Image (cartoon, rainbow, N blue to C red; front, top):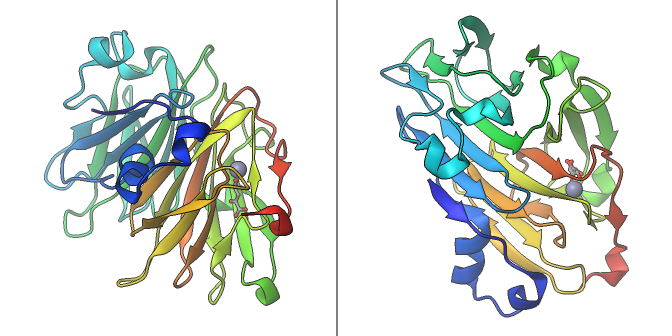
Length: 280
Ligand SMILES: O=C(O)C(=O)C[C@H](O)C(=O)CO
Ligand SMILES: [Zn+2]
């Protein structure tokens, strides 16, 4: 498991490109028939990727639960949000099978012992992108298609940021402990997300960018509002965004991303907005 400790905003001002990438960028999210896991000490969120091709893959494949979580199984004290971003596949949760097509989501509550991933067709494998957060109570394991998500159309063509925020794992849709997650889709020709930018002192966030066309990329903006830097993100890569950091992106073409948050509250709009004129 790749472990990332938290970095602070004062030292961040002096980071080189390499240091910034090593600290915040998750370059590899998927490997065939493996669980790729990154444990971030920022709000203890864990990023998991699973691309089952030739076999069924359990969530704990290659993971030493006692060493990494101090528990007997991954979800003993954690909840999990799953999005399928590949071909059709299934997630078996303690014997119950959920079929997930492209952009379907499954929330798995704390306490489930066995979570196993499968693809329907190895020629077009499923790609399960997941975030896990610490959890203190049992909620309801729930399947959500994009039709179940609460839609927030925002932005405008004139500012190149017209997009729809699909709130899947959100208090208006289902109950969770700490985790909220959703999928934001930019309209064709629009390239900016989350501009004007914000931080949220009481929560942190992880962005995972996908649907980036070949030879295109996203400049992910981060840092305090008056100390911004960027990370060049390629398709299928994620960025850790601590509470002190803005998180916004500008693509060389349109793209889609999944945001995941965790922290003191689940209040989506609890944001500290920064005027574009105040950014540096
Ligand atoms: O496009 C957007 O704007 C977003 O998706 C914003 C994220 O959801 C976010 O930063 C929530 O705090
Ligand atoms: Zn945010």
